[in-house]
Structure formats: C-alpha cells, structure tokens
Length: 74
Image 1 (cartoon, rainbow, N blue to C red):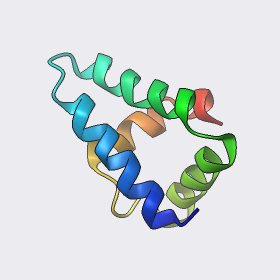
Image 2: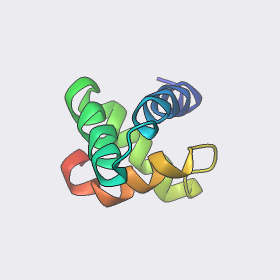
Image 3: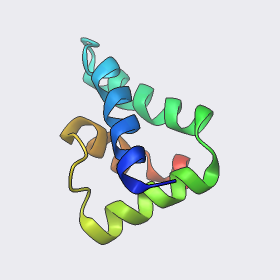
C-alpha cells in the first residue's frame, strides 16, 4: 500500500479520536484502532515511514499516539 494512503487513513482516524475530551484516551484510541484494524505490514510500513521521514504529513496527535504506543503496534 502506498505510504500516502496510510498517512491519509491514519489522519482520518486521528480526526475522529481528537474530538475526545480526554487526550490520553484519544491517544490510546488511535493506537488501538490501528492495532485492531490494520494488517501488521501496514503498521510496519507506517512505523518505518515515521523512522525514516520523522512522520512528515502525519497529524501531531496521531504521531504522538503512534510514538507513545509504538510497542503495541510493532
């Protein structure tokens, strides 16, 4: 899958969870959604992109969630 598509999809997930009043809950929600519904290779590709490009194009709340819950996603 193209990295651009993964970024677009994960940013939409982030927009949904960002509306939650509890930031910690929102960050966990983003990570858990990615864990539950994305194939391991999709998660790996996104994490590799973050490592290589610093997460360019990924919304800050999403990037924070992915970094904070990286072990869960790896």
